[in-house]
Image (cartoon, rainbow, N blue to C red; front, side):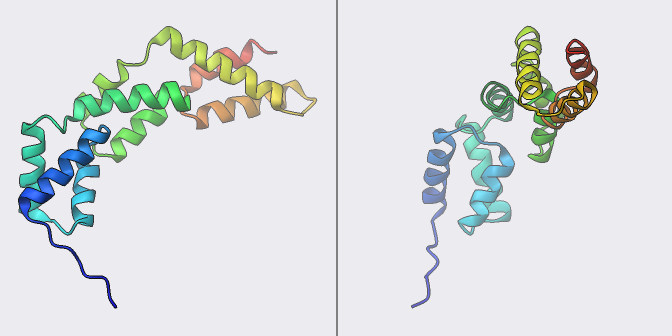
Length: 157
């Protein structure tokens, strides 16, 4: 037997999406993708998103703050990686700037130093310059700014 597609009424879809957004902070693009999975497109999807915004289930600034703070604290991502990830989610520049304010500069630098030391100590190379370069490459790939990375890595030599 083939799976039958369940068609939701607008009220059911709104309720389902309210629960989806209440469970965890969501951005508009994630919500729109979820609506598409449910078979709701175009004007109907836009109406539901507007209603979710009106009921304060969706708020991109709040999402950007939660996302930036969480990715930094939990995954130890740098600012560049967080900004790029938010841009891929179609978050506005204003909301990205607000989200970046969630990252304390002092804590950011301490996290960068800690990550650098851990990576440097794990590397087996005997050559100090090779270890420093690999450490820097790793940290830049994690989204930390190149100038900050080299400031920290130079202190190892």
